[in-house]
Length: 172
Image (cartoon, rainbow, N blue to C red; front, side, top):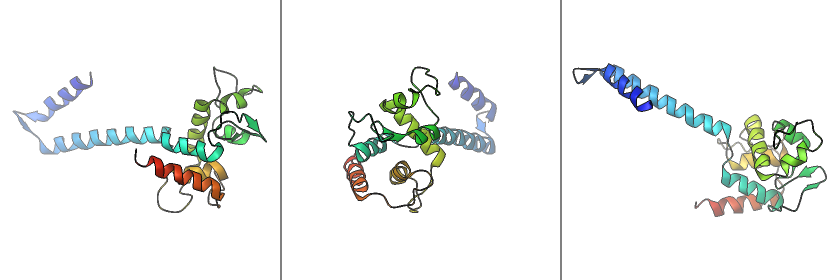
């Protein structure tokens, strides 16, 4: 179907096998813009890479799956109730977000917790360390210090674990 649409466009822009240069240029620009918008939407939907999520997990809890909820923070990523709310109050199995179990059920599930983090980062995405780019170091600061406090200093052990993990996985 897409191929037939492209073929129709190509047929319309050719005149006796001589394409109009301006129309060809416009079609190429349009298709390029469409492709870039699609990529931007994918990035906006999931700004945190899988490697970054893994390193956040490692830095936050050592990816300890036995740590369910302690001191109001739950799961592999140690997500708090307020973070979960800001991340969209995601739930499992169509559970009501108002259920008393919705928060722990989601954030103790690795996939629901990761999606909560993605939503949180979409909301608070910023260059926390002022290096001119938004990357995993910024997401780690947002995750640990919050969307409004990410310019603060990270605990050294958290930063060292994150940095070591990111350096290890930079080869992949």
